[in-house]
Length: 402
Image (cartoon, rainbow, N blue to C red):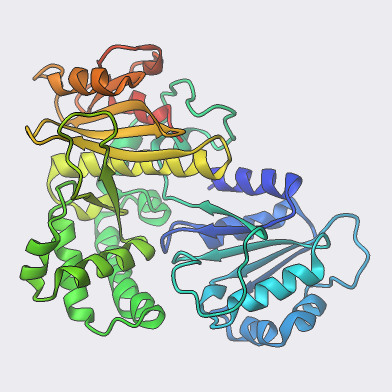
């Protein structure tokens, strides 16, 4: 299926000479999208570090790869060269720097990886200024409806295909289980993905030896998605120090198992300053229905702020509110350091709109405040035209993001 990120790659290749770093979780579709880039240029070469024949080419050095890719041939436009999973090569930074500097302007380079390419730096000079990073997410409701590049952050609402939101809640947003829509396949796929994450990626690319305790940490985080992350309490449950828990959670973030969002504290009296909230990249791992819905919205918002930032539209951030009186709003999206809109997630609209939205909107001066609910059908009205707190169907709100 076509992806938004192929359009992003096309735009980059047409306008920028820097390398593309396409990073994201395992099975999100990075390899598929990078192979689709072959349709953007007839002169296309793909090298995967996990392929032994390709690895030999990479280990032959800059000149060997250039010869393999045919860079010594006259071409009407720069060829496209993909390096997949090259961060597993101990000298990947040095190699890429040398290759880019030697052939700058003569080739367009795409680098993909299932862990953040800057997490485990193993020496070599900085690549600063030589690449732009794009963070690839799983499928979202908006991407299922359109793959063109919107010029503004917020798009008009789109009805999409009936049932897509329910399929996302049930199957997650990773392309293969979403498209198959088969619970037995989903169960097997999730189990395999966990094994690959813990037993391969973390074992091979980090120095962590206590993989059994790391797996328990993953289960703890799964069961408290959306809650405040109490490092001391978690440390007691898995018998390690709180400092170790912090370090391990950063590692799990680096491998796209989970992500944390921090509390917003600017200009809000008696705001909470310490503990973040943690969510999972794969919201299907969250069993509780309400927390799964909240995690799905969190993932959609994270995808949006990453896309807007990576594309150069501004600086965006994802936060939450909680003060010492325990008033809370699930999410705040900031734009260029200022509050932009608030989001509270509910399964049902029956309880009406919560007072916390109005309180925090007044305290922060945010432009919009939404109570996103899952029991209302899609409405084809732009919710971002509303300035006061409003109840919005999830199908409407999510379709206006990315």
